[in-house]
Length: 116
Length: 112
Image (cartoon, rainbow over all chains, first blue to last red; front, top):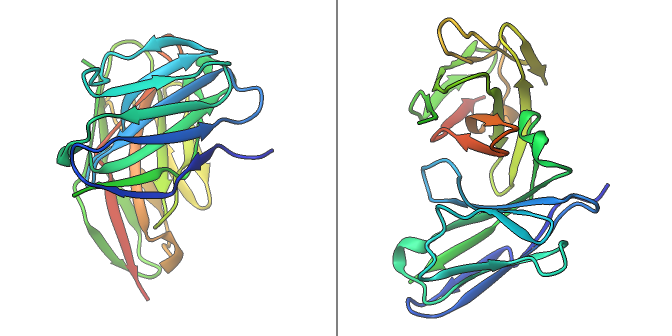
């Protein structure tokens, strides 16, 4: 099966600009996650979708970050405006259902964002 | 709250050396435990997992045993290779919460 697809792989923007990342999960996977991985740290969950509904966005900085999954398939994460501290790798992951947190889930290769 | 603590890196070993990367966790109930690996320029890959106490997860020569009494899930490999150079993340997850919590990662470098 095809893996989780993310684009772009790399992005460099100036602070205060906007940026968007795209994720296409594994076909049929109902649950989609966006994680932020700052250099030298472990990934931190930003938002979790179940189909096209938000399950957990408690750690999403909603003043600048937004995410959507309109048709319950692919998803977009946006940052507007970006700050220097947003420099990180943004990882998308998907699972067939939430109970797969017991078994791990599949990550994409990530988008590396550099804010200058 | 739930958290994962793993030994700080970087860890540098010679090829064929024995590897241990320590991981301890704080959690309520009975989480599943994982080791993920991130090779240079790649995304996270699930290396191994254990879903209940005393389970041993294994893959590619790596092993880890879920020790509830010591709240630990240490990663071991008997003979490392240069190709094992990567960042290793210990993590825990609950199906009820359906999210995975990661440690800060340990960078492993293997010298030929």
